[in-house]
Image (cartoon, rainbow, N blue to C red; front, side, top):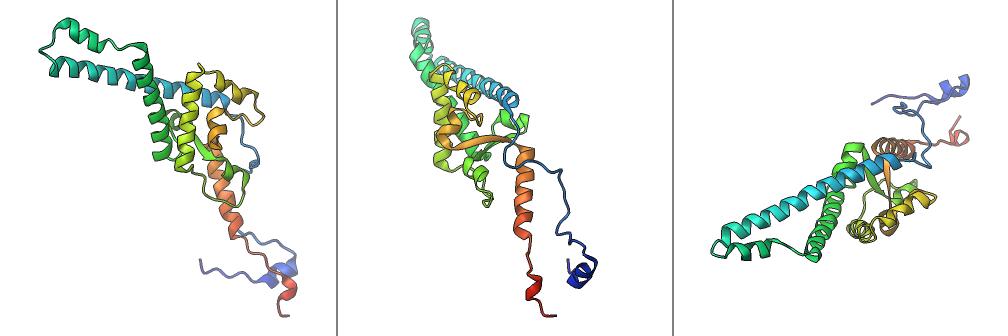
Length: 210
């Protein structure tokens, strides 16, 4: 901003130099607050979305059978539309995997549920390394996270209990993909803090000419 700071003014008066305006309230950046309730609500919303997609897929298949396979008898059509348990479970698993992979990858850690609850999935490396600014998951990490949700479904939700028993409240999808869920507010404050920390300039007064 073409502003000049005369160090002698601050040295003589023993005043501190304000390096940047504080835009957020100070927070503990070492450990984001527990978000189990919000995460649970977000998961319920995501399951509802997947269920709607599942109904839509089966409905579209029924329309296809009725419209394009009209010459078949009613009994034959009903036989085609009456999918067995294995087929229905396979379709649901495919939708489950595709939904969590696509939304997390395209929306950079967001799903419909997490968007509604103000949450985001970030890389655990971002949480542990205070010098990095990239919080997004890689393609392989998104794939592993989606597989984590599939494994939770196959175990009838048993693996979801992991996040209640683990010290850092990370579930099976988090453990498999080396990720964690944080609030948008926490992430914004952390990014702001790290950005300003990189802008701080330290000057050795003794090295300046008198």
